[in-house]
Length: 372
Image (cartoon, rainbow, N blue to C red):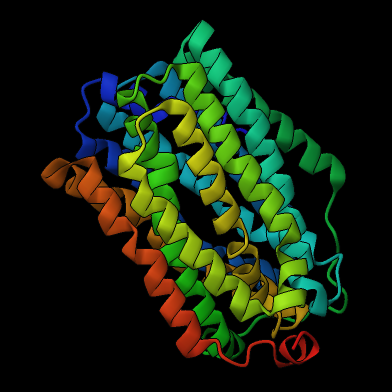
């Protein structure tokens, strides 16, 4: 919640401080760049020493520092710095995901990640609703303070929960790490996830709120927009494993990617805020059927002792999309406008779709056989 309570109005707020669309993109992109740099080493260190809790607690503390910085120093350039702190905090999701998945059997990886993403989406939905109302009535800076308080409360909760010991821990060697890094399904799933994150952070979090503002959306409307986007995404991610079991993982990923592209192509023609919210709901459903399956693929062929490393690789690669998406989207939007940006971004789900068809065939032969 601490990472999203200020996000509904954040791009518009940055623009109000004098930031161009390019700078807005860089502010949002800083979050992903830090994760790209840190996620692999954090996953490796967690596996090597068999610990999870310290990384999660330190991540939440970094979020609190970044939020306080945003509140005290409202400058576009400094916002890049404070967003970087939030990137450090988000890096701990590598460990949180593995910590949670450890309560499930390896063959239940997709189910575990689907539940985790659903719970994350629920918290994001609540944060977006509350954040939009707070920004509308008390101002955007107040949402930064709320972010800091939530992060510190989360730190206390993590410390009270305690460490979950890894059964028969084994030290992660460079050789074993290199083996994990060479798993094809992990790399392909990570690449497609990077494309999905490119779309999400370019549009849903980055420039769709700015587009909504041009349609006359208030800060509360922006909160509703973000809420519906993530609510639909969360509900869809919860049922994604069932869709995968019924229709096959590959078919589900392909269908979700196709509908994501279609919703983006339609986007420039939307003329009202309610229509935009409805379209983003469909977009959220489409994206939600894809991402938990990719995350499940990333760890389904590794042992528990290698899961944090595999998840670190997965999240580090997809963080490229979190960084490159908003960074390049700002440049594109400044050059050819928001409508042109939306058309360009619509190509990325298609690239992911084709990649899945080429490199993920046979990913679920048992499921495919059972449903044909």
